[in-house]
Image (cartoon, rainbow, N blue to C red; front, side, top):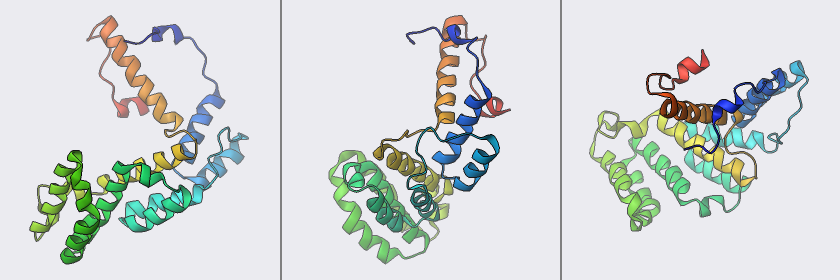
Length: 215
């Protein structure tokens, strides 16, 4: 239950600059530097949060992950945010796993097995990683891992999720917002709609749809 009734804020005005700042936050958060610079020059806005620091390196890290080049992403992350991965076991595991997956995708099964034994096996001492490790290792049993029950691990969506998590972690490590303003608006809008559904009635408000929200 929310502490405040969201209907109290129905008449709070939203200025054009508020909307522009939300757009700008999204662009810089996701490393669209050139687009953001063009947007700034055309609107006369100024950055209220220093997203420009290391944005090029964040973009490179993001790109490395999307390409499946996890080891380069790890090296650049350690340069940009020392000790972060040492303190974030989940994220470190995801990145190492991504390299294992790319070795499997390239049919370098022997290399993948050796890498898994050296870098991933130690995570097996932690119960929450055991099931994931089993899924990763199971990929080695298939001549065409893309057609295995674990095919989603080789998808662009999987790499995108790891890239997003890493980007948020790097931002948080630099004491900057881990989520863009647009993401927070959508999250808050979802919570408000759920609250109103509970308070007013299930049939009064349709379930949240991102497509409907953007249209």
